[in-house]
Length: 418
Length: 135
Image (cartoon, rainbow over all chains, first blue to last red):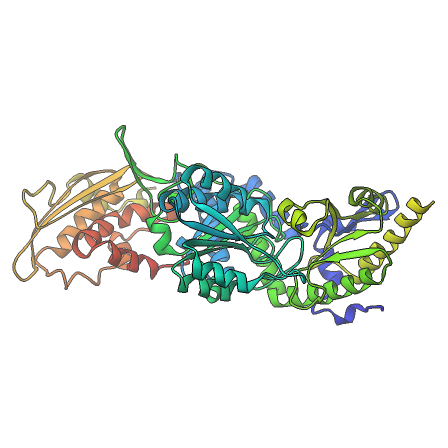
């Protein structure tokens, strides 16, 4: 099978020109083929220049100064919040909290809502496919508060076992369903809108880990009816060090602050304090201002391309990648085998080559992939595999790069056979 | 620089109208603006028709926040709570009459916030805030 670029919804050459890092050599004479996008995406020049511009021209703290620089920084910081609000269709910008990333967003919910509401006898329902960042915070809190953490299994095709999920909700005192929207290993897209409806029917809340979905497909918090949505900037062409917690306003209003200090207070005396309004109640200390403004530029970039187009591009590429990989003798693929309605990752093992060795050999060919557990050790235990290799594509990847990956596999096989 | 503070603002800031605290008031509310350290405490008396008969501001802070409170008090005294319900952000900014940056708008609106929360409750204030979303 071969593939022409005409099939894609936007001009790939033009898009690739926007990303300086893609136009360099990985090693001398070898172009970079970046297929580790599920770990972190590359950044377009518009994001890099936005951050540069802040530091060069109007670097100052936000929400504090009266002077022009602080004013300009505050306006840009709040404008970025509004861009994110529109991007996920939140009802109010007060529901959009800047955090350090998905991990911090989930920890915020656990330590604020969880600590205030969960008690012995309660159940928090998660799944076996979760990233560590959506397991460990709940394990820590369960040890302290005495609630029970239960996990919905997956079916043999890598999709969530919805019957068990329904049964758990019907028979267990579930207070919260905390679930990833798109698996960073399997590529499975969980039906979060349906799960939200089921959770709400049983009086439970739902937290959606959108780390892999928000960068790759249109996500509408109101259409899903998510109570919380967590995601990271660096996986969506934005900078590291910034992420978002979306929360429904009524919930956020009732939640106590988690981290505390400056900017999150209304009034402080030595005897006690009162809290600032949303979202500032949850943004203690000087935020990552440059990164937040950079995330705004990333949202602008994605919005210009259109998330439907990004998703369409990735679907074509993912289908092609899965088909090509399946043709290679010795490749075992994990997750749903159908490229449609699936995340843009291909997780696999190749013959007897350990994924770490494979990643090393591919790197010599200029190809960056991930090897290991991908922060999902329980899922690997569940699948009964030690480590896996993962190729993950994004809006700028091309079918030629997939061809290079396949070629790289054959080369690696030769090294180990020889 | 002189243009930044109109004479009327300076007058109200230096000689705030309705300064003080009313004993056994019908409406009482206090809010703070952590940016400038502004504090405003409102006490009001209303008659059986909810007409504002007495109003008193106690507070300290920047000229903008204190002058806005003083001017707002002058405007609403003698009117019913229903008659002053329409007063919004735009109204206050017009009353102040000087261009304000994003961080200073909070100072100007502190008295409106205290009035709205005191007279109509927190929910109504939040509703009015939401109407200015995305600015």
